[in-house]
Image (tube, rainbow, N blue to C red; front, side, top):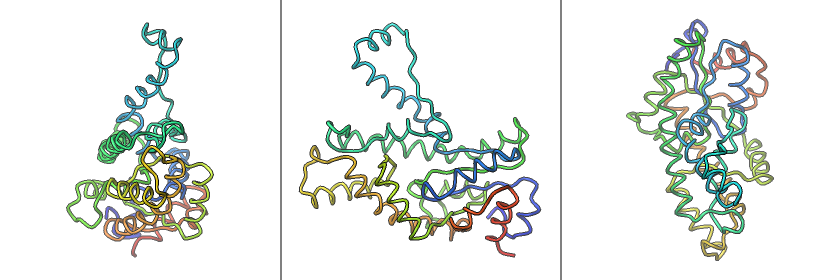
Length: 285
């Protein structure tokens, strides 16, 4: 680990951490709070994915939809309008909308092959964005003279690494540059995340083998063909299983590459001093 003891963390002039957890457990809350303090550079993996690596895919998808409208088609063909996404750290809807959900077209579902291609695009983009962390650490210091750095990773980080492999290139790079911190949720948190997802099911990235297996299991259980699948019903059915699939992968990342804090403790953090103390308590003396 980058900081092997509590003292080395507390004495570090340049603190660097990477937060990982399921979406909704406090990664972006902590990152934004630290950024607002002024001495921390906030690097968002999802923002980097949606701008640098998938921005063109997203904009082209908007253009395809716009071309279905005669007026917009004419303006686009004349280069009279400009269409782009407006992704921010707090609004990643253009990225999730592009990822989409598989199922019947009349409910805005994608054909499964197209859906899987977008999943593969996200996998490549997330791998690249994670490996860009070192570049942004240097950028934060050299351009902005910001001493501390927090990487706000996506919930799917555990799907693009192998935490059991000591030679994993992504984890080797990240753990050499940052202290990797898992925000661990409880069963109550899982229940709340599932309820929240049921109210507003959102597209997300899944490990391909997991996704292909669940796509078959769901259709066999429901007795449906691919074109009969309700996209929202499928992602709702899959979500809790995705949480259960990710939990041991997060655990292995923390055990082999970092430290663990609880979502309950994260909820009590109000400022930089609280955050520094939280991380110190997770490190050995």
